[in-house]
Image (cartoon, rainbow, N blue to C red; front, side):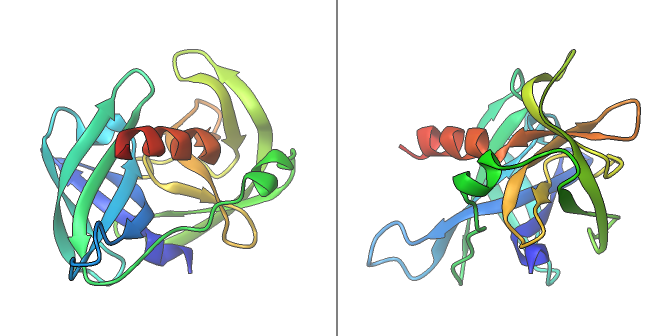
Length: 185
């Protein structure tokens, strides 16, 4: 089910991934839902608008709400006909430990499920950041901005980049959700 929350993000010739974190109506009068998507800031670059491709192939135009290159975190918004919202649990994230299984999508259309395990639930990586989740899912080009999920499909964080040793560095979900809340206020 995690594939329905993952999107492909295209901006100025670059492509990456994103995760639909929030999908609700802005008011009771709205016909459509407003989807808020998290992705890596380096995927959107300096763009004001991007194209999203949903798992069913639907292409949507989205605006860039915010982009913080220092934290490598950006939020996008677009309109959609149905409610979509990823499942996140602070409790599950707090219990994350080395060797816990994790999953992500990769490939041109994010159609390949990759599995691995947490190597460090709270790492500091030079040039990337602190309090990051490291997982041995083999970060590849195009996975930046995509979600890292636990065995029950819970959103654990956002992949920001691969490290030199085949692991992926991920911003924890609680950080992503807190930043989204600030952007939506």
